[in-house]
Amino acid sequence: MSKLQGVSINERVQRAIEEMVESGAEQGLQVAAYQHGEQIIDAVAGLADPKTGRAVTPETPFYCYSVCKAAASTLVHMLAERRALTYDTPVAEVWPEFAARGKDGVTIRQVLNHTAGVPGIPLTTTIEDLCNWDKMCSAIAGAELWWKPGTKIGYHAYTFGYIVGEVIRRVTGKRISQLLHEEVSGPLGVERELYFGLPQSEHHRLAVLEDASMPPDFQMPAMPPDLPMFKAAPMSLMPNAAFGNRPDTLAADIPAGGKTSARAIARMYAALLGKVDGVQLLTPARLKQATTERVTGQDEVFGMPTTWGLGYSIGVPGGNPQDLQTAFGVGGVGGSFAFGDTATGLAFALTKNRLTSDFNASSRVIHVVTDAIAGKP
Image (cartoon, rainbow, N blue to C red):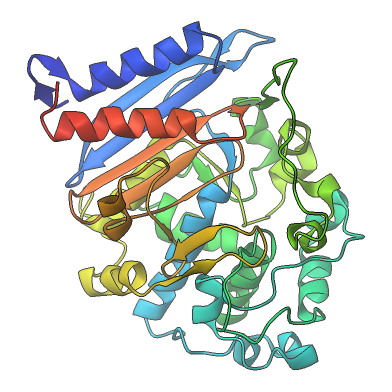
């Protein structure tokens, strides 16, 4: 591990996450980072399961929700590199049913950058429906456009994973979970740490999620009742601990999210930035296109400013303006976050099992890491 002024980066991070656990702010955390293909951080703290006292280890998978959208996007880029598809391929070219109700012109590029105009699932959708691949794909194929594709940007929270996954299935004949194993987790040696659907036999290894308690005087910020978020999915499907601890959601391919250790997803980003033990997932030219071809604007679903590359958001939580130019990654409901930085060669991930409404833990640790790399005390 790298040494700076006598204290390794790993030790700085270890102290920070132990403080979070000791203060009661967090239950269990993992932090992993690579720089130029070499692991520089491997830190864990706290409990994966407080009921049994099982501790977090580097191998513990966490349900990190949207963090694993980046893995789905990476698979699309790998297929584009092999010319199995292009970013301008209409989704309906490989999935004809998707053309219904005016969606024939939606391209893979627009799906990746969240401008496709298909952000919603039926408000009658249940958790059991989410676990039924064919039912969800049929519902999305029959959905109406919210806007002319490519003209607006809005987070496709659930639909992203099914659209990308069905495109992959139609192009390769394989489920997205199989391709993830064959092309990413297997070659990188993290096949027991990075999943979409997690086999039932592996559920006992997962970190158990818990919802963060709210202070007695906490009040939800007022949100306009006509916010489009409220019609993109039923509020009953808002990811929480109960959702993420269910055996059916754990086992299902719902590739808008996934299960991963910090080490596994950081290793994936490292293999996007360069070689990791001889494995490089994308060419530098492909990665440059994926991270510099961007759309920026007001998110039509959640009502906030946003910037997306091709399948990766741009910037880090609490980041400086310059970070927006070089960092690409995806965060998840609950506060886990992972990213790569093309300027520094840093690949970083923080996973945690206490679901908070912010990215404060990730932001704090990211600053510890970047300050250490920059030589700051």
